[in-house]
Image 1: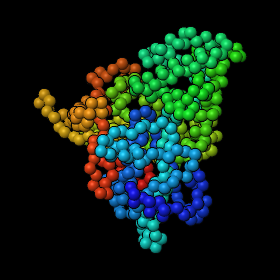
Image 2 (image 1 turned 45 degrees about the horizontal axis):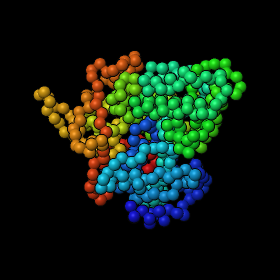
Image 3 (image 1 turned 120 degrees about the vertical axis):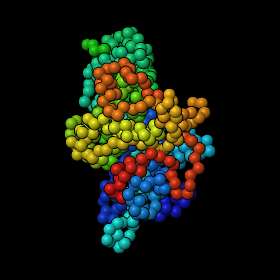
Image 4 (image 1 turned 180 degrees about the vertical axis):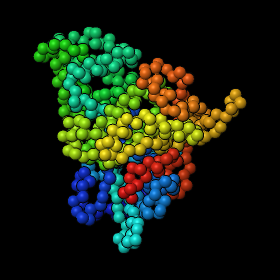
Length: 472
């Protein structure tokens, strides 16, 4: 990537624009702010890394019409416009997946940003007269759990506690936290060590629930505290409803819950989310299938909750924060399509379409254009057909992350009709009636890339075409 230096220098004295990408000069260059989010293990970091790498080396981007037509002359990294947001560590992440000992990069833990500028030759009759133009793509990476926190803005501590405690009652992962509640004494005078112990037990439950495949793991910063770790704003937990006097544990927990909304949730939506133009929501549908019906239903509800963030008209608090700003396009993408033989990809696409149908209908009603597809940001497997009991099984082969050994996987046949899994999930089934769906964690394979080619992927170019192809 050393050839980027000249391109970066070329873009130094470009037109002025505001921090949010709003044009303030007739000569300013347009900007698209692309939000990338998803719940845990959905592959946000790899998506951004592979997208940027494949836009810089576009040999595998045939479905991006501007590239197919030969109109993208160059793509290069530039300093991002937001000086207070950490830069997305593209170079190290790319080195992790394409180096001599490839491995998955560190996952998203906070918000970060990267600016990719594209020099584009205009199309049409007068394209040769105007000369190339530049479009800035500002990519904002943030955890999906932060979007789920939106629901907290319209809640008070008592109703939030009631709902959380009811939801986690049957979950084995919450056993230790429920035991801690038995001795909590909400009416007793606030005691900081006790508050810290309860908050730690609640945070441990959230971590365990996320590992078990649940998606309703809020407050989101309990999972990704960053520099807020140990602060009072993250030292609260749900408590049974009680008539708590002033100075009690319950009163202090309620105060901290309100502080979390005011000092953590609201600033994120005001300072970052309100400025996003296009959005991709990455979904690990295969992981939810493997975890079982409860995890699948939990994922479906979480997708609907996430979409509430894109429908400000239904939320008075959010409407005030966004001041009429709406996301123009939203893509729902089922990741890890390379864990399935391509013969099953249409079924994975049908599943993500059905899983997000309610959410996408609401987004379209609010004016956003939506789409759903299955993709793999970085292809880590190869396909093969294997004979088993006289029938061919469509399998994928890759390197297992745990052992480093090659293995073939047949994950089970996805249903042709997605309702065959979504309906039992809605009805509270304990397990899938027709067996289970296998899942493995494949490591990235060593790559030998030809000049001009980015990392191998599945449908990343189609995702790019939907998200910003209309602006190229």
